[in-house]
Length: 535
Image: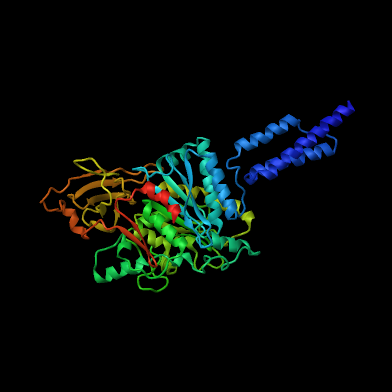
């Protein structure tokens, strides 16, 4: 009997070692790892004191239950280097191959891939009526909270979709989500080698010593020049931009990505404070702390609030402000106009708005840059709901005779909520190659007018209601082609607000030194996306 007990005890010790190996080898969420470690320590203690330990089979069952019920068990809360990041993205894709894709938009100075993970029902394909959304993190290499948050967000989306979570399945079913965890992998690797981790300078810039958030084409200055000269051009300004200097490979890759995919909504992630920042980032008169609003100021404030109010602390007036902060943003709802805070020239946020249809805000996710890894789990808990809610914030134009979609039609908006004082929103968007368009608006009543080369204009009225976690209001247009010899004409009196811009079908040109990348009007988005990795 004693020999059998001794044999059984040996079996128990052996199984405990296996469980311990599972616990440390698999990089679970810390909850799962802690549960397994607790089982192991408890059993070792019981066996060591001669008490009856948990039944061996029961222990194994408990182990596998933890593996099955703990979401996101494939990722640990730590800083992942570039190789580990690539492996993590591949692992996530392997768990959700039907709804995900990993692709590269280019390379860094030191030839590290700028990898994106995408979630949608049909990965790799733009689908009409489904908005395109993106998150970009780690633009400054030493600001790495966002880098880890996007890895965990990807892990979470995959896991909860597989668990048939209704909200996550709906989100992925109606949205195409792109996550770029690291725009500056070279800077991150440099910051990661610094023993103190939390440093405000080391790794901020790319390998060429350039701040990527000062390297985008300065379209703000071009817009402000047009405003002073009375020139009614206020969107898709890249076609009028003259090259002001070489662009870094990371900026060129992301800029091309912005132009090639019809993104609707975006956020880029930084650290150093706790606030949601919205355009414009560059002040109109060049001075610091001067509020410089866009034509969509109300929309941007709503978008920023949609993040700050869902964050655990960002909009909490009782939360301690960052020690180095110039002001307590939480007392203003956790949001700020970029130029009102400090002026930035050549930033990515304003480039999105002035070069494409995309509305982007900047998220400052914490006081510290690259805090101790032990704080990453709390950062995830603080941001998870806000990350998902912001994605939730994110109609079709056809030829009336042929039924074919009309690409690159201009969509103009007049706010007629106050019928006695209509307001023309001086920022148009363009339809994508499939004729679908997206226009972010706050609740109210609007006249939407579509102009396209070779077609009669068309205006419709729509009422916008902000319903939680619902698809956008759909407003379709069928434009009548101008017959041969017939002059194109404006059909609606509301168009008195709209400045006609002549030829509305210029290709977008992206200058990089002596190189020019052109997104032609007949480009196929799917082919272009696949070709991104060639540059």
